[in-house]
Length: 222
Image (cartoon, rainbow, N blue to C red; front, side, top):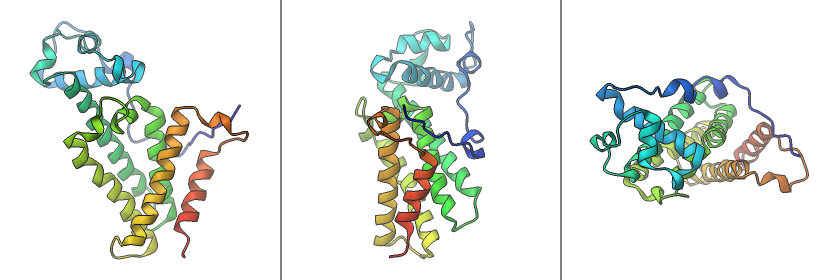
């Protein structure tokens, strides 16, 4: 069996936590209208993680949130809009974690690039259902307009960190190429980890070591 190294830096535990199901959503007769949308989004997120988006139903989200079956339609047109809200909330969490992670390191340091990889993999492995939803492996949400508008700023953050490390004043073609190489590596590794496909490799997988190795190789001066 493979031993997958757990990342233990403070950024792995500090920024945003998914609160436990016992405390995040409490069943009750009434609820504050202002909290209803967030309550339903969190209930939907939990169900996506437990059962997958294909098995999610509006009625079950209502049951988990402790609200009536009519309540969601105050904020959402249908099931797909509820899933899209989960997807967008996940993207916002991921972006905030990325920003916080790079801020922990001095500007222009290679570790800022490694930090982005840590956050990406942590998001994928702690919220695999949402991760799959974001990348269009369910309900074709990757084509939603909200995601098309949100995704570029995530990628731009990677490009900017690459440019900073290289001492570039702008994001040129070389910066774009290196950023793409970094992204494809962590994206592919994330799916291998959540799909448990690394078992085919007869060697221990050191995630932290891999992140540093790929960062060094991609960012070396050519």
